[in-house]
Image (cartoon, rainbow, N blue to C red; front, top):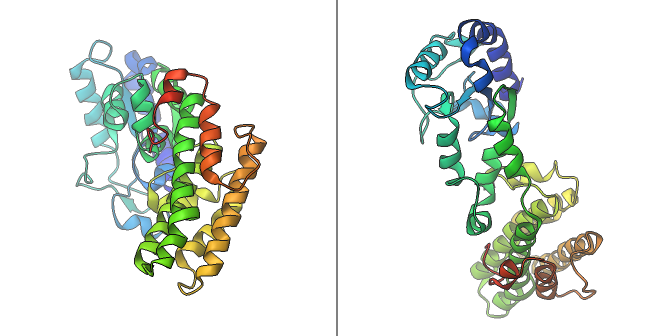
Length: 309
């Protein structure tokens, strides 16, 4: 059973009835679920994941003190702390993970500030907040939301403005062009093999980010990016060629340069399918500027193409 399922079962069997009985006066002000940091919030956890920061637990999101006062929040946290220390053979941790507790009573404003800062997001925040941070703000599940505020924030963050998506995408495409179509072969010609491998790495990272943007999703933290790629509806078939670029025979430089070209062609085809490039060439840099030209807001369009990189 996955961590998200365990946490939901823990909530339903050990806390739900008690909460609605003893805290009925604030039930319509609270959201309960599991989201944030941790592989279990993405559904990526496995047996290895249980070696640290893994426990039956959930989040009780509450609004500000003007709605749920400090004493009520304290009593709610105390009730949470009294829940069974073991569930389905899994022990609750007595030590908070790095960065503080991920479960229990959490002020919605504190959660939002930790993840994205000010809310709602201004233009530059939309451009500069790393995708993995946005992913952590909207992952997991909310099982109950009487107030609706937490669900509203998550909905807002899931709907990245199209001009922002295009700006972020254009930046990744230009990195693909520079690292994969230009610098990788140039480094080989200079006999800089280590630099060539770094160029490959940059190309793969930019391609991954680009694929998630084409899917209108946020790429999670790098260690889960390949796992998440498998679940994408668009261009998930790039998993194998991208893995080959990272792990394939280091001597097969021609094969890797060919693969870079194939990956670029696949991305270009999707750009055309989505109607966000008008170019028919193989030059990814030209496609990057073509995507940038599709941005409607003149202020965003006129920013450096690297503004979101």
